[in-house]
Length: 447
Image (cartoon, rainbow, N blue to C red; front, side, top):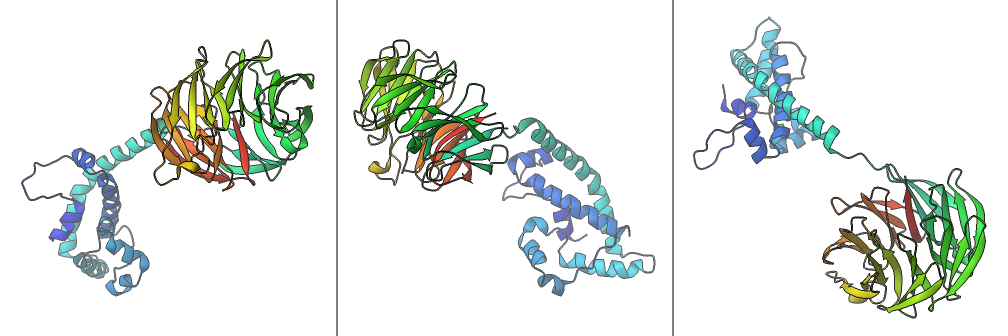
């Protein structure tokens, strides 16, 4: 039998020195593409065998016609697909077809059939095991797609975009008040609270029918807010009035107003609900508020233009981002002192473009994600050593961050590119970009 056929029917891997014969498993471990090669070889082998036995009609190979066929031309460039393209096989197919008219076959085709019969049983066992392994891996190893719904506030469109978290596509657009920015889910995940900044109120969106159910008072220019752990009070930052407004959700009334620094924005409440941290952009401070006394009990100087304040799940720390300072201050909650100042340096990006804004910290306090604004990056930080592990390229002017319910993904709002980026936490890779409305600002996810 010609050497070309034996080479393709039973691939051999040679080198310049004698090599001990390897099993197919060892070959598949050393050469990851070997199972794919085997699969192609198997199906081509089965086709040849059936043709040789007269069980299947296969069009004759014609060299001139194949040269003019784009598919065959591609196969000819790919060695893994050239199993039956050698000239002598084409010749024998023609001769064998003529012999079959009279009930016979060519001698060389008989040899080919015998060789195929010897190899087919081994190949079937190998491929059955390979396909079974792939099936088990797909069924047991691959995690299912998270089933969540994502809500994004669009500052210039005056809308909320609803994104299906399973297939990551927009499914609905909900009209709301003027200039929606901060958004929060209610404790039972049945309502969405929206800071309608230019409407000077908060809107409560009923997620059962995706309509505004009522409005809540908030003070002038509500930009960002926090929900107490009991789900009964909203703490709202009023940027124009330098106040934090406390709103009773059930009664729909303002309970009190707490004076803070100039241009308050960031709001973060401790897991036990005892302390609230507010950041003031112009004063460059983080104000610690006792929620029982409803007064400021500590002022911590941070870098320029602090934006967000986020607590760790254990309540031991809160992290404050500084937009102009381009840094994050890690603050000990008990001592109320800065224990670490994290800075960033993105290769090829000017320092002034690195502006820290949104923060998301995993509940186990292993990883933290920080949005870097016009740098179009999200920094991934080891939350124990405070080392920056990597920078992930996302959309333009990344702003807010939010986890999905099981914290397997991070969603980012990108205000200039008008989309959200989806980060896989396990692989630390951006897996998709989803278009939303104009100037997306806030983002939340619910089961």
